[in-house]
Length: 318
Ligand code: ADP
Ligand code: MG
Image 1 (tube, rainbow, N blue to C red):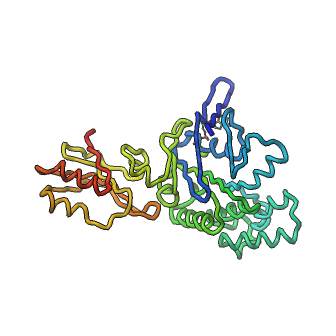
Image 2 (image 1 turned 90 degrees about the vertical axis):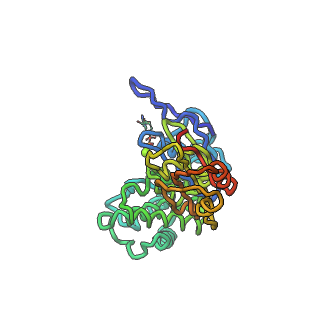
Image 3 (image 1 turned 120 degrees about the vertical axis):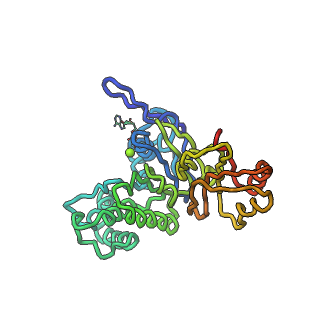
């Protein structure tokens, strides 16, 4: 794709996208994480061409959107749903009126609309809220309406711009679970952007870290975690700065059945002292990153043993 986007303001030129290559596999949940101003929203808006990139191409579901104009572009866009951080609901319309809005715009008749809206509200767990107004809903419920509306035209791709950033942690979890269920049940492909590492940890199959309009690293989450020097691993599992001469950072890029650390002390007669870190469920695996002091005459043999068993071992001082 090699997307570029430069905003030309009166005095400044802001390079929002500087050669981003993004490839999302069908059916996966792909997360782009980065700080405010990194270019995430610009990237997302480029995918459905709400923003036309200055250079590069966008292909969605085999169709090169950047080559389309007018009616053909509008049709292609119907295959891409979008969910917004602040829900973007119409306050004067009921929940049903909001969800049915895109169908109304594309000329779907009243009876068909009614049926489709009913299905969509059931799908997102709001079957009993059709006649409520947005002001009568919680944040989580509003986002469910936003998601139902995004799915109205039966898109294959769902884009989400910080869908959970305005929500509390428990509500965030329920919305993330909903997105994953929708992916599983409808075979959706989901591209989401977020500034929250937790979102990557909880539902993403693949991820990219974005900074200053560029991807610093991108790939399958578990592959990245297992890559030496990974920024994603560091961000998901931050370690206190405890490095001494014997400290190593040990990364578990997947679940392990064997008790490798106790095995280590037994086999190589080394002392192992865990300084910090954590283990969590990521992409269905128990993944972890630990700062560990390993001391003893057979230290290097012990570390080799860990590497040979699939752990990533990095000297912390380096
Ligand atoms: P993010 O979503 O990661 O916070 P954005 O994509 O919104 O980042 O913005 C990336 C950069 O582009 C920022 O420096 C922002 O100020 C600038 N930018 C975004 N949209 C516009 C615009 N419409 N006009 C001018 N500059 C913009
Ligand atoms: Mg943004």
